[in-house]
Image (cartoon, rainbow, N blue to C red; front, side, top):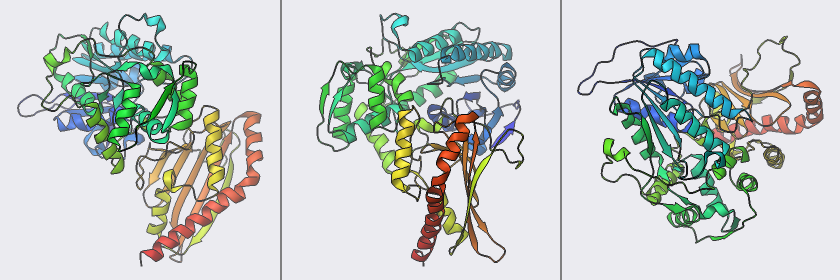
Length: 511
């Protein structure tokens, strides 16, 4: 991965001229999948990222240029857009607090203004499909904000293509995970009224195909396009069809009018890995009929044979990816809005305030490689190697206060990369074979990190080092640390011992 302040080399290529494409939101679900598609189409790709390290371990990292910046910062956006032909605007302030609409509005205006100054040829934006005939004031706040961002970009001097999609079906998407867990875990269920709302889902591969194609739309074209799959169905029908594709028995579904989007989002949060803060805007967007009113995109980007992908086929493909543990990005790829992003203070006498630590060290009768395998596979279905019930309770408590809880799991059962979500942690740093640093994204009165290390000592042995770090916020943070510290010996001490034993067990099994 190349990290620079700006990019200005000339592209050459055979046939159609390769385009210089800026991608915002490359650490997110769609953006992380769009980048390799643009590269495969022969384009040069630059990614704008607030934290470039999050893109470091992606398979395509060495083939792109990363520009450090933020869509709300005019200077960094202007520098990133300089020399670009096309920019993909794939950022949303989903679930980021009460002022998210103003944040979205300001970011879109900044981006549009800087795109015009940079002489950009086109902006491509992926928004949400809005219901026909419904006043904007009656839309959910998030759907309303996405519509407003689309208008801001269309009103700018630079031509824009605004794609509007409803439910995106693909391995790891929030919509797919919600559908999957509701159907698999509940053979019988009471459901909100929105399960009878007509929806036009679309496979993620069709979304990507349209996004890539938009780079070469006619220069003067400035408009919205509705995109969707070949079928319109209700959410209830989607659950029944998912069950059929997955080989499950037909589900008993009883709609209950009293389940509002707010209440149903908590219901979704209880049953699925998708927290209520993410489930709520998804549920609210399904209150009204969301189907394509036009298919004009086909005039400019005709679908090849076999596309758009049917709903059943999109579910089949997504399940295949999940079963093969080959999920490129997940809904949790993007950082949780409001979660701490401060780097771990490294100065023992850090001037930022109190730092509390719990440090453990364990001699391991196994190779450093065997220990690292255990460290990198921690969390998700593999667990945390100490008091599973205590971890489960902590996860449930986090969900009750609006946090992500433990059920996000892992993107890959064995390999981690910087930026991956890992239950209620996020991978902040990996030095493969040596260090794994996790940053807490659970609801806490402070900032927390967990470091796991595999270290060879002077005698050629392997030492497991574990450090939990907490920076309290106010009196509540101080009370939290001293309230939980009596349990650290059991939780963190047991964790260190059990990780060491697991490494020794794997070493012995390997011969």
